[in-house]
Image (cartoon, rainbow, N blue to C red; front, side, top):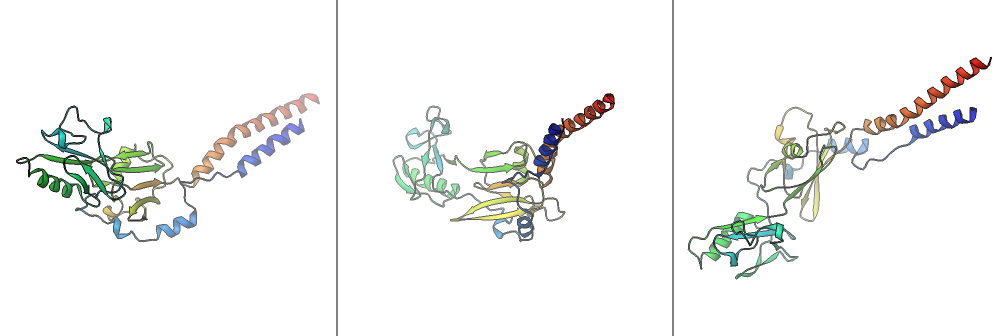
Length: 255
């Protein structure tokens, strides 16, 4: 009997001493440094931002009434969008192969610039062409303490943090709203912003614009791991209490 009691006590000590590492929760030291860093100018509000075509982008081209010039056309019935694998992939050199036009460099062009270029080229054959260009893989990723973390495919260029959080079901109970991390590709590097959206003032520096390619990480509060360990310990403490009660009862009746 004493042996069983000792075993239960040992299990309690073991679970209270365990520590789980959460990759979505920064260390206290890292948080302090990051939170004190000023917001990078690349995260400043930009009302004129337009997405620029990148390598490996998937592009659809639609020319009204001209299926032979279209790839993944939004106007056609049979030459239809990405569901059927209809797109042009930007290669490692930034080029795509356009029907009847040939190889064309689209790297770092905005969709507006590319659309205007196509209208000018196609306009040499067709009067007043109606042309549309769409980037099919513009994505923003939200991870961490959200009710529905996911990768969002976005059509528009300018999105906001809270808009995408809403589409992810909102913040979960343990979300650390003081250390939200936003990672943004910038050339060959990645720049990072740490946001505290609980502070008052300067709304645009908290509900920042999110661009295609951004990754948002909502870390956990530090007490999440403590609460999880407590939840694990409770059944064992209940067992110990029951054991102690039975032991007292047994020793009392034995006298």
